[in-house]
Length: 273
Image 1 (cartoon, rainbow, N blue to C red):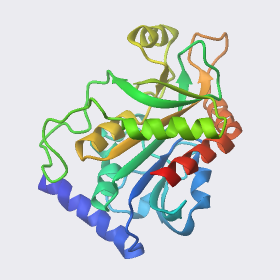
Image 2 (cartoon, rainbow, N blue to C red; image 1 turned 135 degrees about the vertical axis):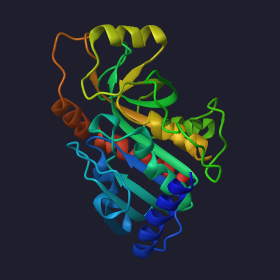
Image 3 (tube, one colour; image 1 turned 90 degrees about the vertical axis):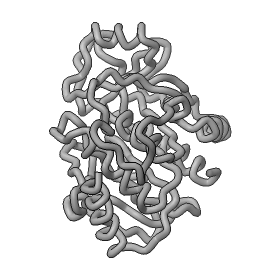
């Protein structure tokens, strides 16, 4: 695991050459949600391709750069887009940015994503706080030798999504009159959308939404002791619920429609943490 530490230290050193900001909050902005980073004051932009060992985003709607600066009084490091398992990255590579954030001093992590809605009583455009997740993909981002400097070999996932952050988000959504949902996110690796049978299976398992990200990052965050909040933008009804084909264009379009509420909610939560 010395090799991982060496890589983390190289990435951290490179970022520290660009900024000496003492960061306390990390943000990961998913498909179509990256514009929030444009509101960061005194920003420093660092393309992923320039950072040693950093995975590079290749998906439309993911800009592929770090932005550091001040947002709502918090020193933040923001990922405009993320990398996914389906792009060919290994699980440990996907979570490398989260581990870098930890090494940079981040204590709170806010993860966002675009997801398919499994709960048939909800609607596209709803926002959902992730209160728990289901991961049935066999590989773990922490498979292999443990890095004791980041966290223990075996670690608890009972409160992977911080209860206080969930409560704060619910309270701020109510103040903003945003109809927030709360539910379970099930991880599929993609890049294909799920089949109708897989969506029915997810519903039987207790999932309210399905998606292709976030869960590996949450596992890494729990391992290294970050307080984590996850919020999904439910951009479409999952496969088989409506008689229509799914496509990534719809994901991006719905993300744009709810961007104002999503941004307002994240900013309100930042003010409170």
